[in-house]
Length: 130
Image (cartoon, rainbow, N blue to C red):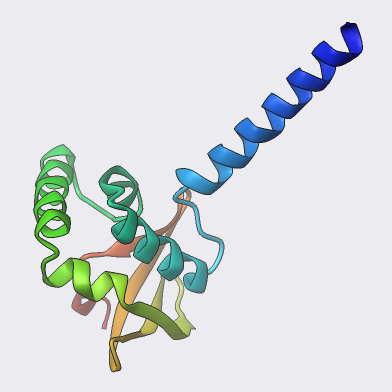
């Protein structure tokens, strides 16, 4: 009886760890991983995850971003279509940021990821880092 109980506890712990690690961790170790996670969060409609992965100035900016992103995902608008079709191409690292070249449905673009204690975060205004 005790062995069965122990096995059940171990199995539940394994499932818990697996579900936590795959669903809500915004931390990406590389720009390539960041692009994959951000794109997947858009596909899955995980707005709170997108908020945590984006550099936003304050609570009002977070709420505005959340509202706009919810609308975009619901209507499958421009941002949704772009991000769900974005693929990593290359990167160039600088002191406090990384410029990442991406492919968006066959066209090239670039994004800027800011290096922070919480991991990489998307900069909403990449031209600020020219």
